Image (cartoon, rainbow, N blue to C red):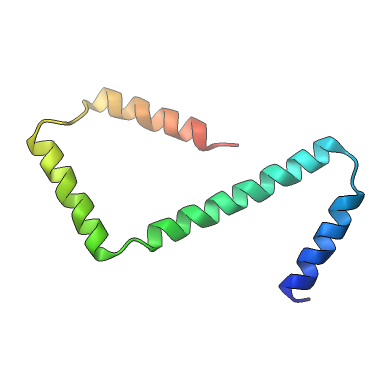
Length: 86
């Protein structure tokens, strides 16, 4: 089956589902998949020039003393990990 046929079939089947819990699970699954795809595309779509600009900005921030101590950094990472889970 091509993608258009699969999408149309999914639409038709979803229209028949009345179980709100199941619909909510499907919605969360689809959103998670789209979020994952967008995150990957965003990372790989970054040009070398953009990466160099970001690296220079980071070095400038360090020179200006705009840094975090390791404890704050670890707490930020923990919060990030917790928030990215569904």
